[in-house]
Image 1 (cartoon, rainbow, N blue to C red):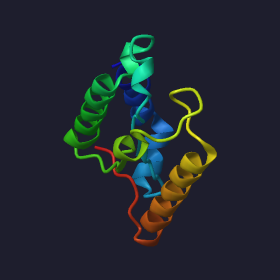
Image 2 (cartoon, rainbow, N blue to C red):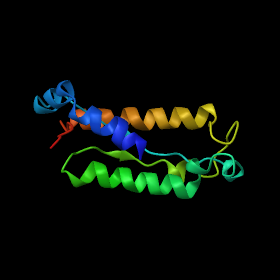
Image 3 (cartoon, rainbow, N blue to C red):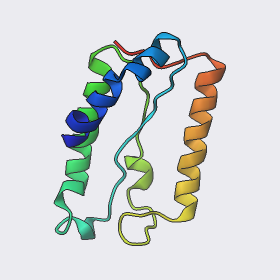
Image 4 (cartoon, rainbow, N blue to C red):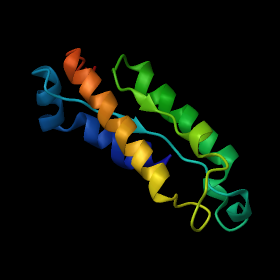
Length: 119
């Protein structure tokens, strides 16, 4: 996947990111694929549910195979069938919930001193 090869691997190897991790000052949370409306599958096949689940699985394997401690927020079950404006972008309530969930996770990680470790 382009995200892994062109972005994620580069970011995780960046000297500043590695130094922050070494100093226990880094928190990375991966926000997974969210479900698009099946009506858009023909127009955007790479964002179909099956493609999204494959992507999520590949990211889960990448983020967990090297011993890195990067939590993954998996939104598929929450966004499948959720109200959408155009088939992919969700209503304010959905986005608000996702933001609250992300902030709560980061607060919990900070309270428990669970920073991201990179190996």
